[in-house]
Length: 121
Image 1 (spheres, helix red, strand yellow):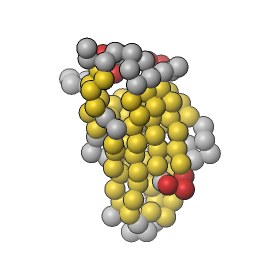
Image 2 (cartoon, one colour):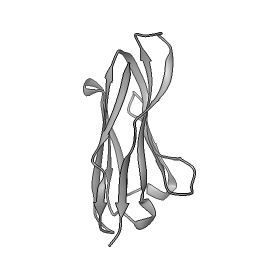
Image 3 (cartoon, helix red, strand yellow):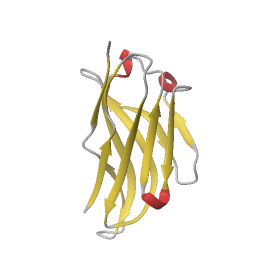
Image 4 (spheres, helix red, strand yellow):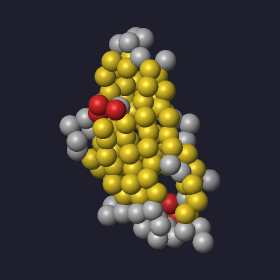
């Protein structure tokens, strides 16, 4: 089994900061791209930030300059530093990773259960 577990969500005022963490565990042979998605009520899930194993990253236009994705390959973890948060950032944030497991040796998408981020005064 492979699991992704997120942490770090919560309630923050506009202009505040939060740091999300996601750790992968289980029968992992290798992992490649990791990233963060979010889904607000009534909206489709969207990519927030992605990171490849070689360290390159990409961001949604709406978060560029405010969010930073980073990863620690040794810890099989990915992080999302969110600064200058806005009410529009309110959503459930999901961790995603493309992982090859010892179960079937095939690369698959895995998802965490999500963590709620609420930006409100």
